[in-house]
Image 1: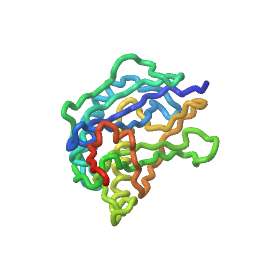
Image 2 (image 1 turned 180 degrees about the vertical axis):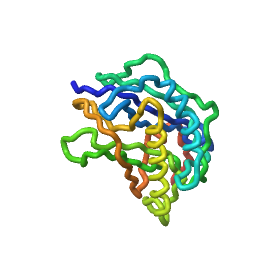
Image 3 (image 1 turned 60 degrees about the vertical axis):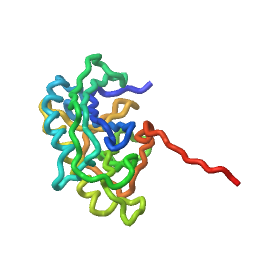
Image 4 (image 1 turned 90 degrees about the vertical axis):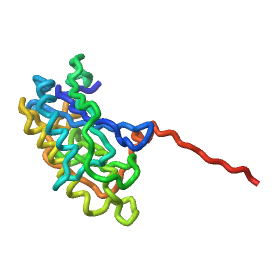
Length: 223
């Protein structure tokens, strides 16, 4: 059985597309350590109090970062305290609820179950049999258009998406309690600070975000 280094799991999510009924949901997460060597946040609720407004503004922002779609919502933030067994070590709920949610800023362009993958890099090269060298989240950026109708993202978007990812890490890194975004593994407690981001140019399909909407069929008799 593997072991973890104690840390906190910061998750955030909400409604994927308010234009659909029933609506799908989305969630992303970043692991946080109190120091570069690990340790959970001393006060998760204080972290959420700090992060609530910056995360609202991050989700709603345009400018040099990539905006999220207008039909997506950021509805909540959570912090879970992860113990050495990989399970929640704190039974208390640490949640910030935005109610109706923060809306995105950009116009939808492709189906909402298409996502953009953002990879977290560490100081370690990605090698076989090494753990916690990299991580990944799938932002609900279905407002990134495709390049000439292909599976590739238009070249105008990866740069601003990269800035969106950096802005998220800056919110975490700028928090009280010396919070540090990390990649962690339950193999043997490996934990490494995030040192960079990487964004590709191909859409990812998230089948978990294509679950609530039920298909309507039409039929025809033959011959």
